Length: 324
Ligand code: DGY
Image 1 (cartoon, rainbow, N blue to C red):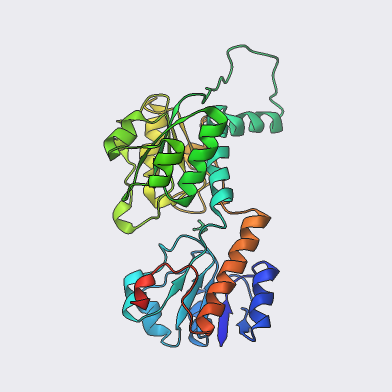
Image 2: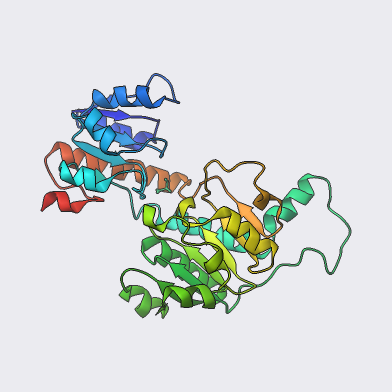
């Protein structure tokens, strides 16, 4: 079996595949054009996809009829047309669980950075603007006893809620497609409507998987309902928030600030006015960027491919319907 891997991943994944006699095709250069990428995919049975530069849509499946399986090096699968994959009985593997701690750590880090204007203050030091003690300058806010609202309480949201509760005794509310019994039992999390989530959260953190109908879900009309001291955190997908509306909401004092690990577009423009605000902290999509998580992702992606090569079900499959 030939597997095309578009970028280097941790060695553990490569050696697992090689041990199984799976032939790996690496590109000759890092940044491929769409046509070059397609050409590699045409010559493979499966693809191990790193990043989300290109989309696995109808055109892709028509252009690459040899592809029988897609192994994503991510938990998110918004760059794959799952219906098209289903129709062709192509399983799509993803890498949940192994990155839940790292990604929720990133949300937790952003929450504190925004509350205490850490990015802004760090920049001041770097710029040589560390001034004498001023009791009133650049004050932050404390998180103790506040309410954390989670949009999409799954594995990552659960970890974020657990940490926030343990560290800051935060009350947890959430809005989901489904009730999360574990979170209700272990964290006393309360299920609320979307509007209640917006209106009652001191910190609102997104941990849902993204689909195109949710584009700009967090827009002017939602920010307007939020508390004036509220912090907005997005470590899921940039498509969830309208960036101009977010800027307007912070500047007008409708909300306190925002911590973003994902933006729209990515990479974010250096000129984006959000970057000028002291209560904004932006990271370049590093949610799962720990050695532990990235090794885990390489292992799970390889396990998915190996299972497929043995005609077994993938341990982690974004479209388990293909097996029905
Ligand atoms: C994921 O795993 O979905 C990360 O956001 C990387 O794309």
